[in-house]
Image 1 (spheres, rainbow, N blue to C red):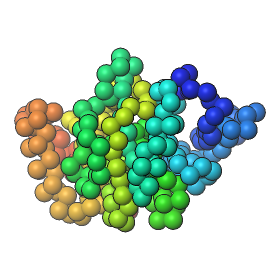
Image 2: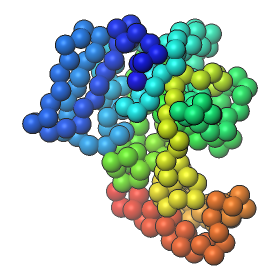
Image 3: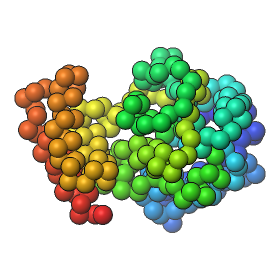
Image 4: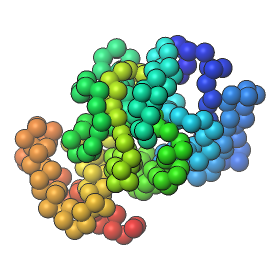
Length: 246
C-alpha cells in the first residue's frame, strides 16, 4: 500500500473485522488497530470515521497502492478548496491506465446524477465537517450487507442534501485492480443496489425509474433487450427487500 511512500509519515487506522481468536495489534505509534466483530464495509468505514484523529481522512482498501507524494496532493487540494467537505481524486489500474473514464476538469460537484459513480478509494474528506453534520455510510449498502454497492452514491447525496461542498481534482493518488462486477452497470449486483438506493430517494416511483434505467442500459449496450424482464425482476426484488428492512 505504501511502497511509494514513507509509511511512518502517515497516521493509519486499521479496522479489523474479525473474531476473538484473530485480533490484531500494532507496535507502531502511527498505526492504530480497532478489532470488531461487526461485519460489513460501511460499518467498517463508519467506525473509522468516528475514530479518526486527523483533520483530513482518506478511505483506503487493503489492495491499493498510493502514488508517490499522494498526501501532499490531497492536502494541497483541501487547502485550495477550504470549504469543501469532500474532494475526490482519480485512480489508475496496475497497468497505468485510468481506473475509469474521468472528467479531467477540476470542478465543484453539484449533482450526483451528472457524475461517473465515485469509488471510495477516490474519496478524501474533512472529518470535522462529516462528524458535525452526522454523515455516515448507509450500513444497508456496501460489501457484506444487503446490497453490495451503492454506499458511495448515498454518501454523496447526503453531503449535497446538507449543502456541503464537493470538488473533484483530476490528479491520480492511488492504484487499484480493475473494477469489479459490482461496478458493472449491467450486473445483477449493480442493478439491485441502484434500485434499492432509488427507492430511498423516490419511494414507489422507483418502479418507474427502473423502466427508464433499463432502457438506458440497453441503449448503452450494458444489457441485451432480451434480458429486460429478468433485470426488472432483479430491481423489483431489491425494492421489496429495502422496503422490508427500512
